[in-house]
Length: 86
Ligand SMILES: [Zn+2]
Image 1 (cartoon, rainbow, N blue to C red):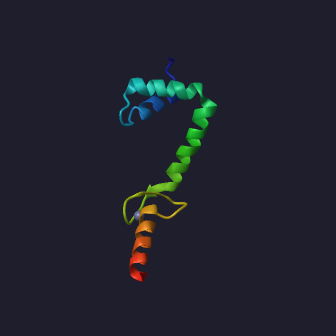
Image 2 (image 1 turned 90 degrees about the vertical axis):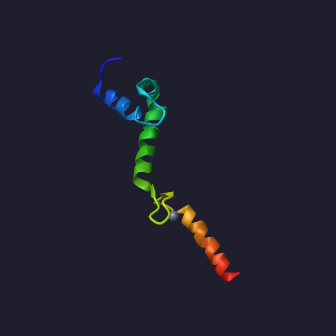
Image 3 (image 1 turned 30 degrees about the horizontal axis):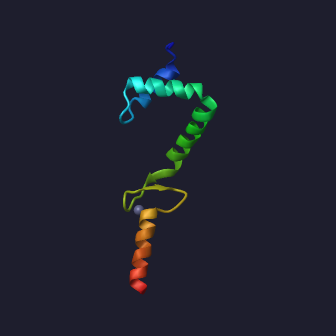
């Protein structure tokens, strides 16, 4: 494979993921490039969404979407309210 800086950068990033070495990263990147429309495009927008919307809850540390409340805290609250009223 030619040394294309964008590709090298992507391989470097992907090889930081758990369980993936440079060899697997290269295979993943090739797969991505060969499936630009099916993989790269939706992945780029999904990653952007995750970056924008998914954070850790300040109260309990669970992952949550900023579009919704924390599922963990909501269920605790529900349990607590039930305990109080029944
Ligand atoms: Zn929470």
